[in-house]
Image 1 (cartoon, one colour):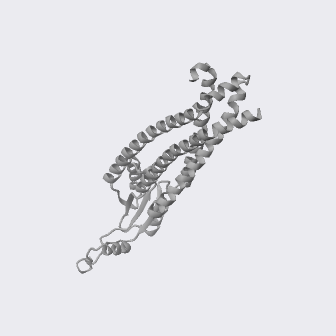
Image 2 (cartoon, rainbow, N blue to C red; image 1 turned 90 degrees about the vertical axis):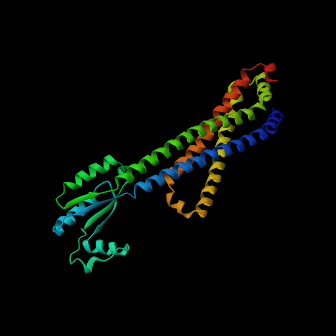
Image 3 (cartoon, rainbow, N blue to C red; image 1 turned 45 degrees about the vertical axis):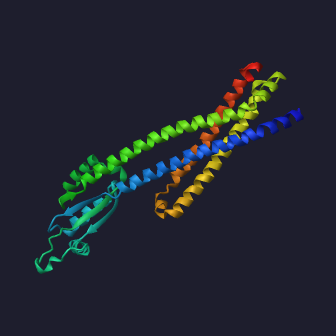
Length: 290
């Protein structure tokens, strides 16, 4: 029985090694696509959170009402960051942008004070911004609320199209990954079909035959996932060295979730494909194995 085990190990090791390599390569492809999707999602959020709303303060409003308005905007869930711009600061910014100073023509600053704030990505929708504008206009300290409606519309349309394209690609590649992993495992098990049948013929039960192979499949699937994670991390770090701007898009939570999915996918598909192949060969007649 010990010699039989040694023969089994020698004959199965090469095929399982190639299965691990094959599964790892396929998981790397899926993981890189997932990383691209995560970065695209974060980039879309960053674009949305750069949408600025300008709330202009009425002339001759009291400092108390202005402070109340600023506090109100700062406390809203849609506010990501805000800035209170006084009339003097508005003039300084106007001049610093390359515009001519009107001091020789006007003796009064025509620019109003304003509260400029950037919104959170989930509120970067035309209907949400319309409600925000309506709410702010009801404040006695507000004279006007402005934001670039065309920019918000075009931005959402662009992100929606890119998301649909990436979703279609992700679904297609995911299906291809499952099929490729399944075929890789089945090919590895094909080389062991006579061994499986021989064990059955000498009286081994189905569970006795399948159990060690299932355990190996789980182990090899985990190893494939870890190899894929290592390669993906290397690609990410190398890319961030070449393009440091991408580092700002890194999301540790989503990356961790992606890595967990990669390992679980490798384990699940390896286990299911291996178990199915073992049962298939156990059910086949000896002559059908040739």
